[in-house]
Image (tube, rainbow, N blue to C red; front, side, top):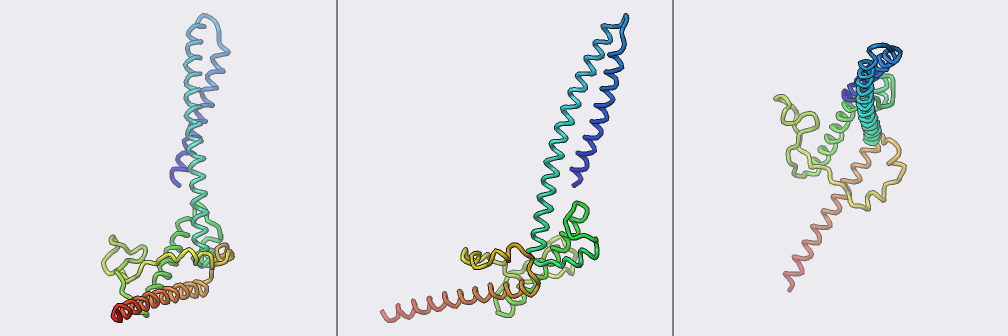
Length: 216
């Protein structure tokens, strides 16, 4: 974001320089007399400076456009994540008076996304703990190795992306609209239930294979 502003400021400065150089060129063009050779040399120098400054301005404008496009893509990405994980829109609206991501409120959106992500991680950990699953200690977002002493560390099994069939089971509507907290809980529980069923199936298959080997 700072880069975008810096590029725009640089373009403005270069445009001012271009206007000044053009003014000097017009001034010398109107002069004549004994110093005509010197005047032509000055005009040539000014025209060279003008061409160089205009080229620099075009380069900075191209960079500024590219940076603005990147920021726009980032805003859309943040908005998409914000909606898909079911962040509380009303909290942001009350705080900023807007429901869209902009350069000025981008960090506030990211803060709410971080908070919501931690809530989902805590929810996942709670269900994993209830099942008695072993878990490696993982720090929640914003509380990594650099966090001060006393930060909360929870044990979490990293969420595993489901089979390709899972994506086909979900409707397009779920992908296009934000899910409520209750819907997210239900979706999480469905995923956990399916994983438990898969684990039980694998265990049963192993038992069956052991039984067959004993019979032989």
